[in-house]
Amino acid sequence: MASPTLDRVLDAVFRVDASFNVLFLSEPGQHWLGCANAAELPKTFIEVMHPEDVERFKTTCHDSPDAFTCDVRVIKSGTELWVNVRGYPISAVHQFVLCIFDISRWKTDEAVFRHAAEHDNLTGLPNRAFLKGAVDRMLKSEGSPFCVALLDLDGFKKVNDTYGHAIGDAVLIETSKRLLKVIGPQDILARLGGDEFVLVLHDKTAAAAKDAMTSVLFAIARPYDAAPHNAYLGVSIGVAEYPAHGTDYSILLKNADTAMYHAKNAGKNRVSVFQQTSESVDFSINAAIHNGIEEGEFYMEFQPQFDIQRNIIGAESLMRWTSRDFGRVGPDQFIPIAEEAGLMPFLGKWALRYSCHQLREFQQFKPDFVMSVNVSPVQFGGDDFDTQVLEVIAQARVEPKHVILEITESTLMHSQAKTERALANLRDKGVRFSIDDFGTGFSSLAYLTRLPVSSIKIDKAFVRAIEHPSSAKLSDKKLIAAMIDLAHSIDLRVVAEGVENEEQFAFLKESGCNLIQGYLLGKPMSADAMRGILNAPRQATA
Image (cartoon, one colour):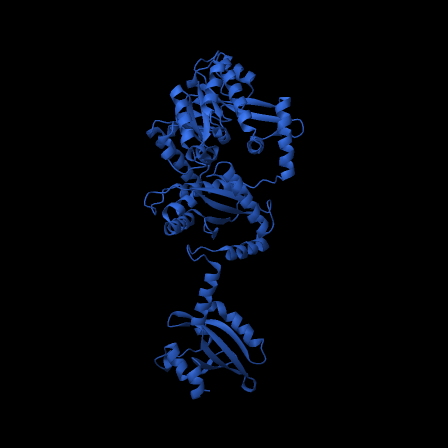
């Protein structure tokens, strides 16, 4: 078998018995394996093979009455190599001739080509092709839910246009590195193209995925030093859950994309979970909103706010709607539709007027009572926003210093000069501003000092983390303490919403939080109920 022809073509030729004991090894094979003398020759062919490939090789060999071929790994001088084995049975003596050809270079090239086909050449992340294959495999094997989250950078186009594509590419590479640091070991991060990324989160419901995305918001929030001047970006995230929001790859990705655009339309720099609402339902609610306005179906509730000694100091006014056709409709559903229909300026002004008149009533029992009123981003679009606010306050005969307007941080971050002038005018008249849901749309701290903000409100998603002992939740507790310290360092007060138990209250008190809002001390209530609390001989903390 050790003919000159074979020696030139093959890396090694073995002759083995039925148990794969080596009876003969060609001289080139001895050199190829690095055997210096006869004592170093392998006793069996099995001992040079990778253990994971042994059973597959034996099965192929014994199931093939004629010649066979298979690719296996061998260990040569401590190095793993791929070889092609061509086996020829010698039936008369129950032996095999094994012709070995080293194909490691080919296998490496194949792996390189496959990697290039399934990965993004800029960031090195998996691409759309890899993502589809991975999700398809999960759909076949997963019994537990998982989530697909679509991420789109906010402000990236401006960086690209201002500094050029080279800087833009550096920002995308840095983004991929930041995201890889905050995802779980079983999660998948892929780049679809442009500034769009996808996260596949194993064993997570939509609610758990939304909480997990807080770390993504903070990761993107840090300044990017790739640009000549530090660039600040945000990220809008849409989440779809399997199987609740889809049972195949295309539907899950489409629904995550829909949720992502909802996040952008709601003000950017936030997370939105896909909702099973059709256009026909939205259209019906749209019509019902008009009817509800005419029929007086909208009303306000008031959730009390307390200082850290549990004394009531004010309340947040909350718009509510009980429809004749749909029953009670949540603000998260009717407000986006009202904004799209152009009704929020009207509803927002009505809510402010009603709240200010109730403020005057509440101050009969507590003269320093303050009222926080939510303001929709759409209301900032008007040229006379500040004038309208001041007119409503004057008509209600309350002092501007007792009115706090709650505004989302994304609204402030994307504010224009016109809006900033309006806010400054209101501040000069005494109106105060609070950043609602602080941390959920986090992008830049610059607006905290540039704009007339007096307080921040920590989102309930952070507060919920206080009572959980996991490492991820412990990091959230550190974030809460850091946010409180940051706010105090620039003379801002801190309100924590969603406080539901004593453990949360104790941690917030210890961390220096100023004001508390939540079911522990008071649920949203009617104006009459609020007057009853204020008129009680001793303030209730329910």
